[in-house]
Image 1 (cartoon, rainbow, N blue to C red):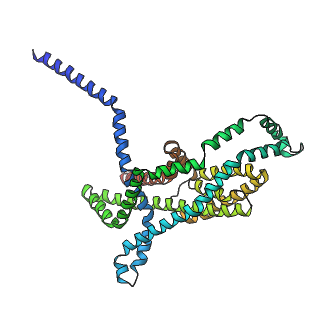
Image 2: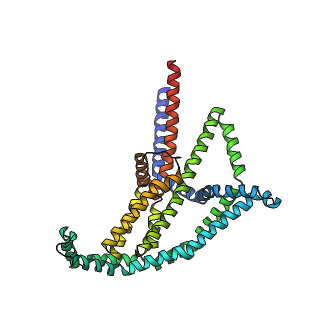
Image 3: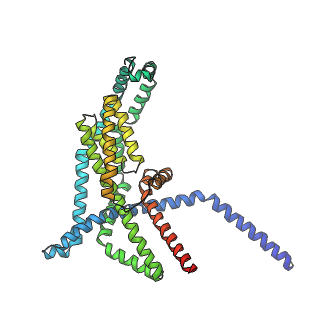
Amino acid sequence: MNNKEWKRWIFWFSFAVASIIVYKTIDSVSTIFNAIAGFLNLLMPFFLATLLAYILYMPSKKIEDKFSRSKRGFLKKHRRGFSVLVVYIIVVLIIFISFNFLIPTIITSVKDLLKNLPEYYNSRLEYFSNINDESFFAKLNVKHYANELKKTDIVDNIMNEAIKYINIDNMASYIKGIINATTVIFDIFVTIIVSIYILLERSDIKSFLKNLSKALFDEKTNNKISKYYRKTNGIFFTYITSQVLDAFIVGIITTVAMLILKVKYAVLLGFIIGLFNIIPYFGAIFGIIISIIITIITGGIFQAIWMAVVVIILQQIDANIINPKILGSSLNLSPILVIFAVTIGGTYFGPLGMFLAVPIVAFIKLVLEDFIEMKNSANINNND
C-alpha cells in the first residue's frame, strides 16, 4: 500500500468514525438533556436557598446592626446568629398568620364562588334578559344575547365540568400529598438549612468570591466586576423587595376599599390584585379585569363599575406616588423598555420571567451605557 492510498484510507476511516460520533451524539441528545435537567433539579434546593438568603439578607443585616449597638456583650458577640434567628422567626410567624387567617379566607371564598357560580350566572342572564328596551344595555343588543344564552345549557355544562375538576377539596388533598412526598420535604429542609448557613457565613462567602476574582482577573477587570456586582445587587434587591412590598400594600388598600363598597369576596379580589401587581404594567390590568368579571357575576354591572373606578384610582395613586417612593429611581427604565422586558420574559419564561425581566433589562441597559460611554471617550481621545 503506497503513501497516497494510505492517506485515503485514513481519511475515510476518520470520516466514518466522525459520522458515527455525530450520529450517536444526535441520537442521545434527549439523554444528554435529561441528564442536564436531572442535575439542575438536584441543584434546585441550593438555588432556592440562595434566593431565600438573598431576600432575607437585608432584614438580617438591619437586625444585626441593631444588635451590634447592644450593651449586652453576649448579644453583641453573637449578633449575626441572633439576627438570622429573629428573621426566620418573623418568616415563620408570617407563614403561620397566612395559613391560619388569609389562606383559609381565600379558600372559603373560592369554594363559595365555584359553588354558587351557576346561580350567579343565571341571575345575571335573567337580569339582562329583562332590562328595559330604552336602557343603554338594550341598545347594545345585550338583551338579545342574554335570551339566546338562556336557550342553551352549554355554559352551564362548562361551569359544572369546571367545578367538578377545579374542586378545592381535591386540590387540598393533592397539595397535601405533594407536601407529604419525601423528596419535597427533603428539598424544603435542604433549602432552609443551606439558606441559614449562607446568611451566617456570608462574609466568608463574599471574601472567597472577592479573592477568587482577584486571582483570575487583572486589577482593571476586577474593579469592573466589583462595580457591576454592587450595582446589580442594588438593582435586583431594590426591585424585588419594593415590588413585593408594593403588592402587599396594594392588596391591603384594595381589600379595604372593596369591603367599604360591600363587594363580595373582597379579600379574594384584593389578594388577586395584589398578587398580579407584582408584574409591572400587565399585572395590574389582568388583576382588575378578573376582579371586574367576578364582581359583575356576583354583584351586578353597577357595583362592578364602582369597584373598577375605585381600584383604577388606587392603582394610579400607587403608580404615581406609592411605587416611586418605594422603588426610587434605581431602575430608571422607560415604560417602553419595561413593557418589552415583561413581554419577552413572559413569552419564554412565564410569570417568573415577567417578574425578573425588568431588573435583568435594567442591568443590560447599565452595561450598554457604560460600553457606549467608554467608546465615546476613546473616540474623543483619538480625535485629540
